[in-house]
Image 1 (tube, helix red, strand yellow):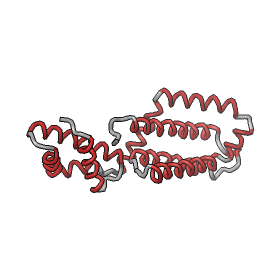
Image 2 (tube, helix red, strand yellow):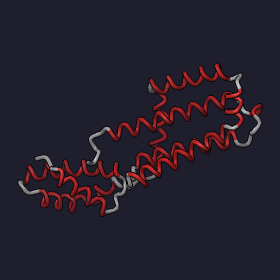
Image 3 (cartoon, helix red, strand yellow):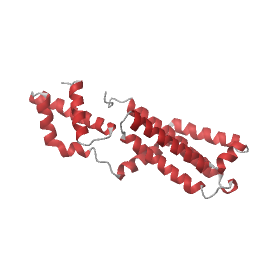
Image 4 (cartoon, one colour):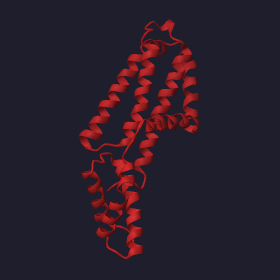
Amino acid sequence: MKLNKNQIQFIDGYLQRNDVIYVDIRAEMIDHIATAVEEKMKVEDIDFHEAFVSYVNSNRKEIFSMNKKTWQSTLSELKNYFRFFLKPKSLFAVILIITLFFIFRETMVYAYLKEDLWFCFLLIFLSYSVLSMIYFYGIKKKRYYFIERTNIVLSILYWINLFLFKPFEKEEYVSDVLVIVFMCLFVVYVLYALNQMNKFFNSKLIIK
């Protein structure tokens, strides 16, 4: 017996009242609870509310353990990010960056980028952070754990950029290899973040 829209929204409301603030985590929990409640309704021949209360009371600890995220989640996100480098689109992006480097390395564009890379990335980082906050917190008024977790990778890249390039504001002191490596890290991050967003927003876990 499949749950209807009102029953799904009832579960969603229950989780919101119990401080499950992230939409994507809540969606996973709803999917988990709904499957168990549907099975309980079928096997025990009881209505939705009775099955829901019975299941939640018996499995509350297990259910809400899904809402506890630790540093291991951050480590997992970093692993996923570096695995993404093996994807064809990432490999293509790396090849394209290296190709563009050899095309533009003797131009003023590259000289400027190399000299002020830390500042350019600071602008990108701040712009992305502000736009992200305006869109998700201001317009949609929702929080997504996978987006905040993905942003941790961007923060790490920002600090790497700051420590590698800020001390050397004269272009001759900055290694071309470091510039290429960092640009690859950043461009692949953009592809990875877009991929994560696309994966979630096109999944069955969206709460309508």
